[in-house]
Image (cartoon, rainbow, N blue to C red; front, side, top):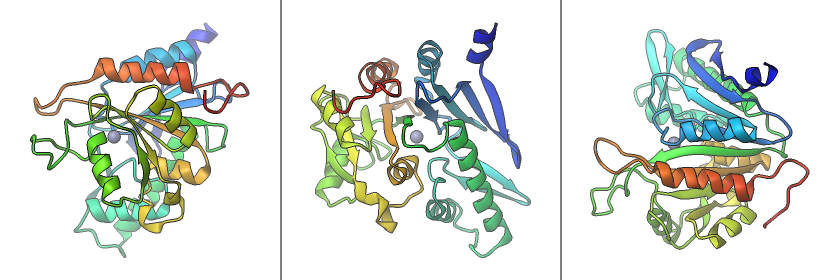
Length: 279
Ligand SMILES: [Zn+2]
């Protein structure tokens, strides 16, 4: 009975706006120390698989929910302020994000101030559900992207692809330090913050990119994303990205992304205390 209760999912609502909710499967703990997180509700290709794996192997899986869309809508009467829930983990990121997504909202207003506070409150709720920000934690983000990329001459859309990351590196992007040679579908890739993880994943034949550690010091690279925040806090972060279909374009890479989840469990996640560096 106790075990069944522990495996059951719970819903935690943001007190200031209860239609913004976290679905929490399992629970954060020191051992096992991994926490999976799906911030974009429309990027859910492999969620059922992750749920089954967390129920089997432990740890926690947190899914942010509101209206099934990528962006969260903050209701601050009489306005609705849009935010990207993967751009709220630093003060600078929250500010840039609100300005970018709400061009008609002026900065020195009550509504803007309330939106900043509520974004910070949501970030705190999420970080608590992920077990806090001690350095022994491993965060595994689950995302989906669209086929190809904008401007790829194949009608691609979006801005995530191992091919595009190579172009960005060649063009002098400062948020990345390395990208593996493309070996699989360009849209199925790992995005990591630690060199050891990059080395192992690359060696094992997956697409992988490594965030540049200088994002910690460059104000221009502080976008408030969980990967930048993780780098600032010294927390190991692994993002599992795979293609999803949008408007009958592209396909859901469920099998590929589930294999990536399996790979992370088998080769990268170690119970706390048994962790080795590169394996
Ligand atoms: Zn996403």
